Length: 446
Image 1: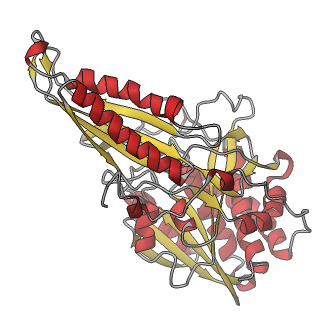
Image 2: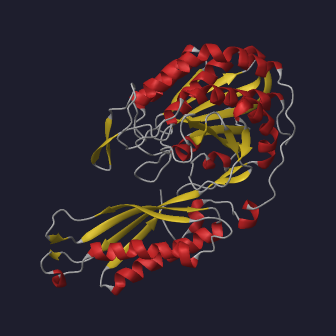
């Protein structure tokens, strides 16, 4: 993947403006009586849930890093084949695609779950706690489903079992997309882009796609947002080159650690003093600072890794330019140099407004007493956005915070203490199966 902080055409982005993001919220239609297919989903749900829980615990105990989802992919593929679903493996790496052709003609609905885990050592105390390790950027690291992808995969496996049992009644086709590398690969690639390049949205051509993500919110609550909902993200790399010298004689060299520290501090003024965040948020975070091997040696260079989050294309362009200028000028002031690389990242996760309007009653029905509500903008990022760049899509969230904890302060996604309460999983299975059958019965007219 080509990386550049100037050539914005490399991103293939549709323009997003602050005015679009601040548009009037979509009003949902009143909830309707569930169809016989939805009632059939509800009837089949209790029988599949014990297996969903067992799959989730197995996946949680045996997580695999992005690009290494070999065991997970086999578990998924074996299950789909046992259900009589047409299966394709090795899609975009270790991706698995299952095609369930209903007994009646109709549209094609895709349901997506991501399978990869994070380089995080689990610190919680669970009977199925992860003790796995892996190699990430040349280092041995703990591996954990700290973002909840184990639940996503297990829930979609359950949805596949339910819908496979209803095959003759389905008016259309359901494509199950089990995606690798949502968290991204070291070279900047993501599983969604790789699967798209491998034809995941074709043969048969997908009409709409749905996905969900678990996170901190009241148990079983569903949240959604029409239009832009999650931020675009871009990985940032800054390499500062100085001059190596003895730590006792810093004047004999140029200290890239000091220069890099100054760059980190100055970058924050881009958001706090140079960007109008009264319209939409923007973020620059440096998450890694690497340099030096010994206490008394000033190194020759340091490398900083970070992320940029934006919702507006014009704002993003300005931030990219300011990051490069800031790093280079701060380095130059001390006699060092800085090279800035910003990758193509992810697009803004933008839910199709008409599709969201159509599906809100379904989400409300699926959430039951826990409720479904419109969410605020979320500065997390998702490569689900690449599917939405090709076909209409809806991505929604499911609350998994245990009822005895405050969801506002509970450890969040990517924390070594993150915990997804399994009490929410029936809602997730119900929601994903229901959006599929409701859309098959009542598709958007082109």
